[in-house]
Image (cartoon, rainbow, N blue to C red):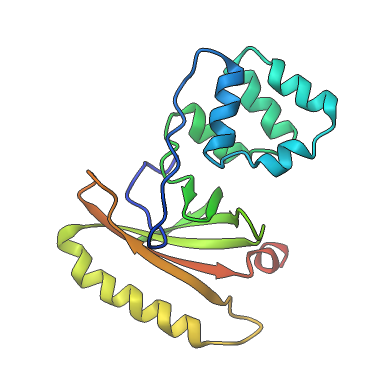
Length: 187
């Protein structure tokens, strides 16, 4: 079940990338994916010239997405969200969402990567209606601060958090970024 687009959390002052919209050519579409940080220019530039040519000359958007997954520039999750036109929330501040790991009663946890540091993290995202925000936000902030103070090899470390209320959403949310996703997946 794909995660519906919701209000997600961004660090204060973050500028949202523009949404990826269908374009007239697959080449324009690739440019939009690069501009939105869904595909990182650094990764594209490191591809062999033949692979870059294959991607830039691709004429079909669905085929382009498949090639981007094949060349490890997108994950299957990202490609599926792009195909479904639910790209909002695939970039959260300095993080690009790679996969949906799970969901609970109040939150969804995503695997993400810091676009500059290339650090893989888990991001816990709450999407709250305004009436629930004041009640649950306090509880989440308490959890976030408690986890941030813990240092133990069997507990993932909290190292970043933020809140925002995106325009026109009528919703609010919180996120907790946790390092250590690699060790949990390999365990």
